[in-house]
Length: 304
Image 1 (cartoon, rainbow, N blue to C red):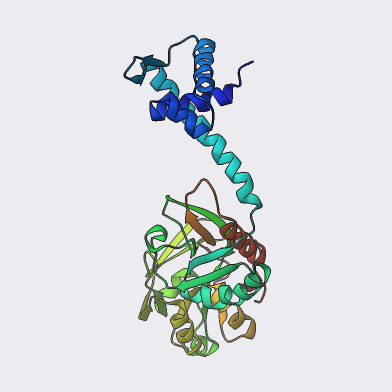
Image 2 (cartoon, rainbow, N blue to C red):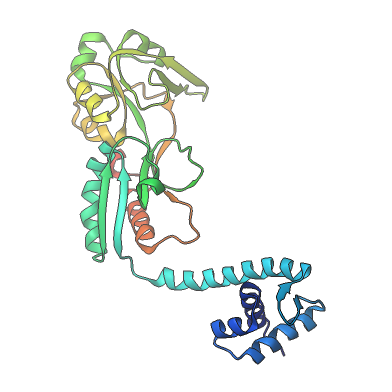
């Protein structure tokens, strides 16, 4: 019985090299064995795959179409075999991670030592900024991103939910009053996050689920959440910030959560990485580590 896989491999090498001798050399077989394999394949298929002359060897039209399919099949087989060994390999090497500044400092930085202890053959290089980078162009293995994702060329894994909180310091509320509905925010100084798509449009949903967008105003705008948090703590206005940034302030009472009956946008922390048929062990290990550390009920939401 013909070994179909071996015959396909022999056919593919002959098609690529246009030579039985060169194909035999690459396969570490004799020329006669390769010739018999290709002849058996042609006989089994009932077609001629090559036009042979004393001077040239060329694929027939059917042979060309068959080669396209065979090359994909052989590539898939090779990829599958590599992936088995790949999945068993220990995570190692340098891992380049990009993350937003506030989340990176507050939550990734404390996590990195535990990850390094668990994976001693991995080195981590972390760059923190609040701009959206091109992972491939700048050579990062993955990025941690917060909010809605728009880049479809990246693969994303959800790590944890993000809850937005409208909050202010007790001193501000004592001086300016406490808003009870989104509409009440129009009479207040609001602290604006300029990296948002529409910094002045704060979106809510009523207790019945109807959308409600309020256009707010304020004297301070910044592209960094920590800046707005400090301003809120100083009584400069009402902030709309993620609970991973202000959770401990809410627990301590230095900030007060406002308008709790009106829900806000559903956001999340994601790990994103370039599309690839194989996810390297170091990237997979890091993403799994973060997913387990943060989870569907992150610790920063349990402090309020």
